[in-house]
Length: 124
Image (cartoon, rainbow, N blue to C red):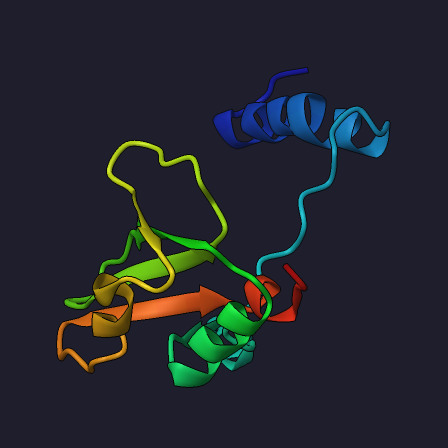
């Protein structure tokens, strides 16, 4: 029996990919979501504002860590993390009552200061 190139490729694919997959030797990867679904998902970040600062102060937050987020957009994004006292490289910690933190409330065109929703729900 002779095989042409297409038949050999089919047999190789069947041997390497399909048989182990059917035998449960590989973990199934989740299906990718279409872009339209991804764009409709809720953003977990909220822009830092006076109410968040007031809530954090009333909940006893002492320090805020500022972490730059990676983005391909022409805007710089920074995440604010409450009561994180140990800075990593390129991260800065400020006392919550410092002038630097109140300056973050002023709107800037190319810089946004964000808070993840997990830091809005916690009691400190």
